[in-house]
Image 1: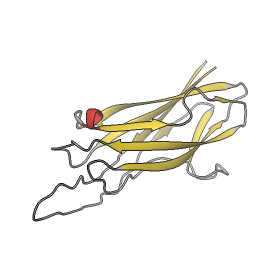
Image 2: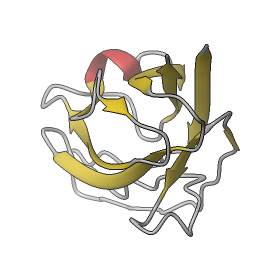
Image 3: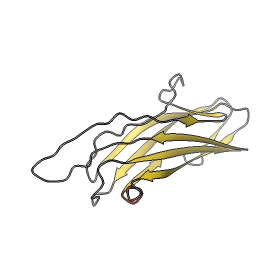
Image 4: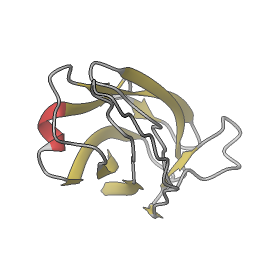
Length: 141
């Protein structure tokens, strides 16, 4: 059985470069989560579903972290994986990297795991001011 969770992350950040004028604009973001027997939450008690992540303003070379909670809401163990897709602009996927510390973790029914997402921006990034992408968390078992 494959279980997939699609978390649309409208990660909007202004990547600052040197110059006379630096302007930072924060744009509210939202997303949609589709889950089958797997949930992603902003809190350890799993009372606040996670629908978007705002990474804030980022600069070249920045690394930032976000904690999320993944819960197996089904009745059998699942092995969890994370990928990304739908990068906008597409070039952002080669300059911005998302990883997590729960790849291949097994969650038993009802188990909740705290996961740390790590977003890294290449020091050499240029020409990208705002970006969006989807985080896909899938469980198989």
